[in-house]
Amino acid sequence: MRLVPLVRVVVCSVVLYSLAASPSAIAGEVSVGQAHQKFSEDAVSIKAGDSIKFVNDDNVAHNVMSAGPGGSKNAGLQKAGDSTTILYDKAGEYRVHCGIHPKMKMTVKVD
Amino acid sequence: MRPPRGRAALAALAVVLAVAAGCLADARGWAFAQDNAKLKEMYRRPDTIPFPADNPYSDAKAKLGEMLFFDPRMSGDKNISCATCHTPSLAWSDPLKVSIGAGNQPMSKRSQTLLNLAWTELLMWDGRFPSLEDQVLGPLFKSDIMGNSKTGMVEEINAIPAYRGLFEQAFPGGAVSVEAVAKALATYERTIVSNKAPFDRWIENDENALDAAAKRGFALFNGKANCAACHNTWRFTDDGFHDIGLADQDPGRGKQVPDVPVLMHAFKTPTLRNVAQRPPYMHDGTIDGLEAVVRHYAQGFVTRPSLSPEMKKLDLTARDIQDLVAFMRSLTSDDDPVTIPVLPAKEAM
Ligand SMILES: [Cu+2]
Image (cartoon, rainbow over the protein chains, first blue to last red):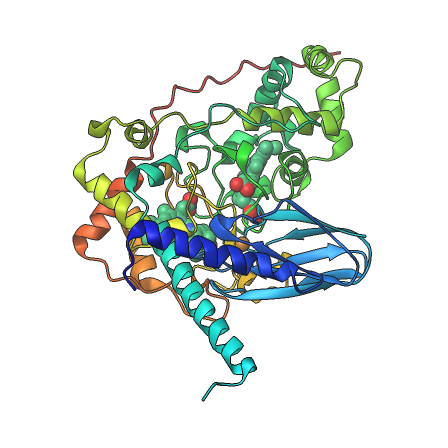
């Protein structure tokens, strides 16, 4: 599909925005991206029982390790384009990082 | 005939998803096809060195750390300093495949450069230390590196009156201690920064700073050779851990983090700053030159389950290989000579 660049930017922004925004419509799921070897959020606040969907919108593979109350979870290898969902059912502070790129870090606060 | 509503909704969703997929692919295409200006911006050097809040910079600390770094009396036998294996004459590394420590014992790995560590995340080839302050305690007290003991080291320093004064200046009110040694050494290490290289002058728009081969090499590095997937930012490292298919059996990061399969045989991505000054290469020192490194990436790696997904066989011409090497050579800085400090003498009783 070869659209005029400006039209393409507008169409893409609208479509991507609506998709990015849609998880909030489904109760309790927040989406976090991983482009440019960085989590798109430094910190996220959610409620117990909510989940985070980690979307690898980067061009390299990533991993997600989440440690906090109730132990740690490891999402394994996430290739470019893959996504993985982690459920947070216990309240508390979680530290999330990528095992491949430890510089990628964020915190999750679960109420 | 009208399709049932559910099917219409599904069809609409499918269209939206298809367009979205196209957009994501586009976005990725844009990322790759960023014009040179934007790409160059990603490699611009920072202006200041970051220091942690719990060990802020002071001249007194850096000066003391510099002395301790070059002082062989910090080792058990008083014959090995940090600079033995991290010599400024060889880009803060040593020329050996694996370093030789106390009692002439070979270590298991090659010495890493200390350039630009103020910006790094985890230390060591396998990332086992979280900060420079923690790392210092590794070499000092391991029997096969500097082989000292904590009490032995503190006693030795206390027997040198001028050192006691320098500790007092760097840590007012505090005595000579292992923690103070760690903080002083870490502060000095953070000041070890490579100067501007021809590459940096090119980034600052001096078109003549690089020749045509190095410029083509930069394009390959960020394009078809895919080096920038791991060697990125101004330091040319993601501070990450990858198995690049060197044939040895060392588990590397996999020993620290056993539950992520791609971390088996994975090692910390080295900075490529001043890389031409410090052969041999890799954690085991098994690759002698930069051309051989590029050949390893093109065709020479072993394929195994832990191999990084970023490692793909490359189709490089002889000129491509020369260009990549020319580019890496442009990362060598014209550093000022490093002065070795005069150390205070012990007072005989
Ligand atoms: Cu990552």
